[in-house]
Length: 137
Image (tube, rainbow, N blue to C red; front, side):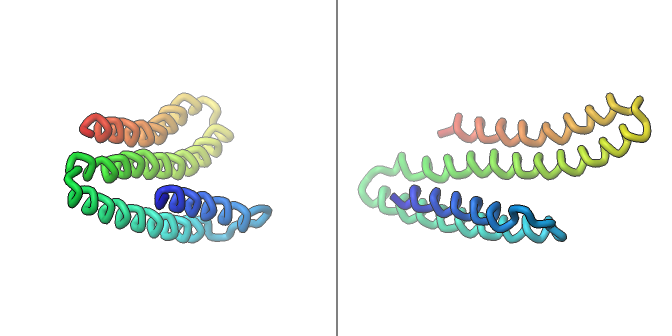
């Protein structure tokens, strides 16, 4: 039940941020992203606290094997989510620079695609880490 509440709160936070920013020129996108991340981290902290309290209650009932599974799933989702967020920021910055370079010198297209691929690799690393975490559960 608490997981559903946190999921709904995260969805509302994301949709509310998008609704607030629709049609507006964002002067400081990093400040908006920082505010969004603070709200998201507050939700994640509350999810961790709920998982810890549920884990201690489960351990008191004798189900010690289930205790770490919730935090393992949370860690796997954080690994993927944060890596994808970082990859999105990297691709945005590298892509803008690559378009500028290709506009001036079209022969540099192959080099800029390599840099874009390196930026997208960050998300793949997050998925690999989350798969390793899930493999240990």
